[in-house]
Image (tube, rainbow, N blue to C red; front, side, top):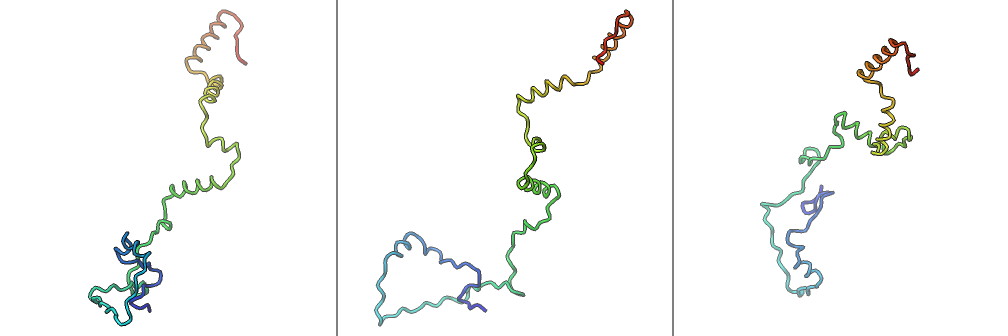
Length: 149
């Protein structure tokens, strides 16, 4: 059992307020001459009315201080997923064929890609109607019908 003069294990002992000011630091460098042997100082007794006792966190003692339990919280699924994904992306090496989808395309490449894709775009309803009308007209006139195939 710790005595009343010593703080409990693990607690921090701080000097009383006002002892570490500029004046106290200046005095710390100089040594004051000790009093002669015949003269002794009397110790002033402190009032026991407001004596501070160390806390006892054992069974049946004081209530333990609040701890930060955020690490042990059951987080929602979407938060767990985004955290796991971030860690996985840091740890795994990804093949280039899959990694290409992690970054966006620049404007130059986008224009060339869209120009290429426009060639293979399916025809609209109006274009199909016009093509079929033209083919019917060629058939009516007796000309050879042109097809792409």
